[in-house]
Image 1: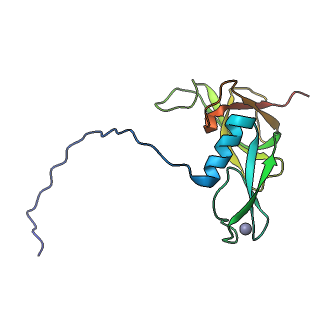
Image 2 (image 1 turned 30 degrees about the vertical axis):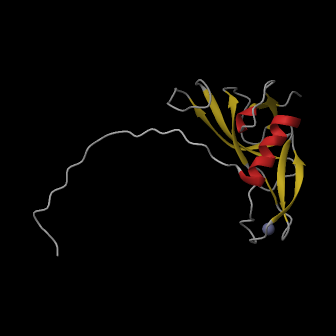
Image 3 (image 1 turned 120 degrees about the vertical axis):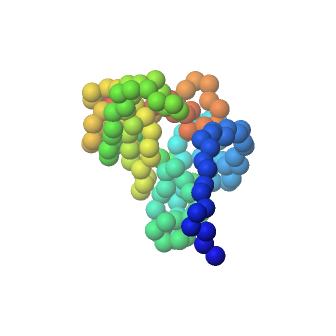
Length: 150
Ligand SMILES: [Zn+2]
């Protein structure tokens, strides 16, 4: 039964909590390779052979399970980009910087990452990753991508 006179009160608040997230075998293998070897791995689909970077457990094209690792890159091509001119909470870098969608050599998917705010970063430009010296097993072990020196 509906109560037409029912009123709702709203309380604006924020809840923060820390948590641990299990990466699982596929993402864990990808992050371990970044940390321990400074290489980028893609996962190859057992059904259609597509190489996913970052890797995922199942293929979104054919539904097949991933069967093998493939080292990709390190060179990649910028498919799209966006300049971030001002700082925001949770930003991966101090602004200004650029988000880039990179298709690494040997991959069939694209990966979102960051670059410095460099005018040379445009669609079609070849970029290479710069790894941090001290890596922890996170996507940020790749500090950023930079335009390949000609
Ligand atoms: Zn597939």
